Image 1 (cartoon, rainbow, N blue to C red):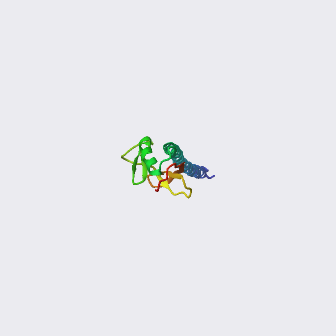
Image 2: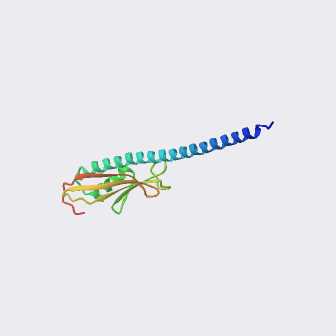
Image 3: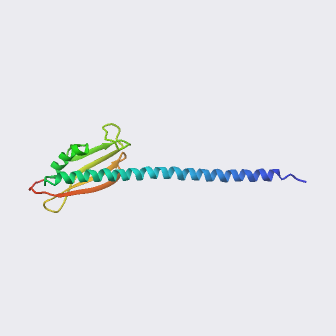
Length: 148
């Protein structure tokens, strides 16, 4: 009479391999979902920061000034710097204003418009790799004739 021990041992080995494969797949899904969650969280925060900046820019523009003047005035209120026609705000990984390690960058710059008397600024938030997370435009009526 032959022993059935090798057959039971082989069955248990196959079961362990199946469970190990399932665990590896589950771990991979959890890592992917964690990365996706961080990306979506960054995109949502970028939307909030861009919308806040756009509202500040529109408020500054309510006086009817040029885009350059408005961006210069708004730079202090959003905690950024204005140079070369672009308002720039740098953020670290926790979305705090920083001059050091930059994880995210908000940029606002004048955009072209075909409508006379309308000033337009494009606001975008990018990650450290330069990928655009969120983009929005802010526009207002200019009351003065300004050549930009």
